[in-house]
Image 1: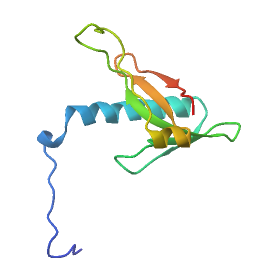
Image 2 (image 1 turned 180 degrees about the vertical axis):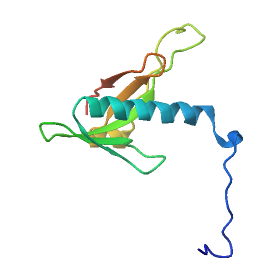
Image 3 (image 1 turned 45 degrees about the horizontal axis):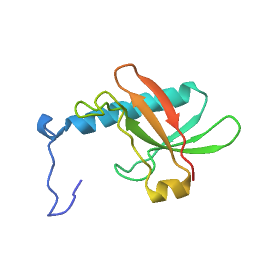
Image 4 (image 1 turned 90 degrees about the vertical axis):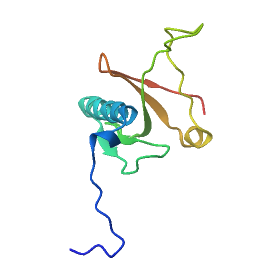
Amino acid sequence: MSYGKNYKKTVITPKLLNPTHHKGSLSEAIALMWLVKKGNLVFKTIHDTGCVDIVTLDENGVVHLYDVKTVCIRQSGKLKGRKINRPLSHLQRKLGVEILNVNLKTEECYITKHET
């Protein structure tokens, strides 16, 4: 199979696996499992970046759009120990996206609904 003269084979090395991306991938995998266990028909987007990570169809036929976020706790400052807030973008608010929070330590998931 020929990819053209400008094609360069990319070799993935451990150096390319950013710990932040690793956490995000784990959170999405846990979120996918959680949504399937709740009886949803689950669709994963193919884009690495975007306003929606997961689309679901629940048992009532309602479509839900989710942006998966890893729960992070502040490590310093006067708000130390508090959860870091992850606001929706303007487009996400317009589309009705919900934030699906994932705690990697406990593997718990919960949804944050925002006013549109």
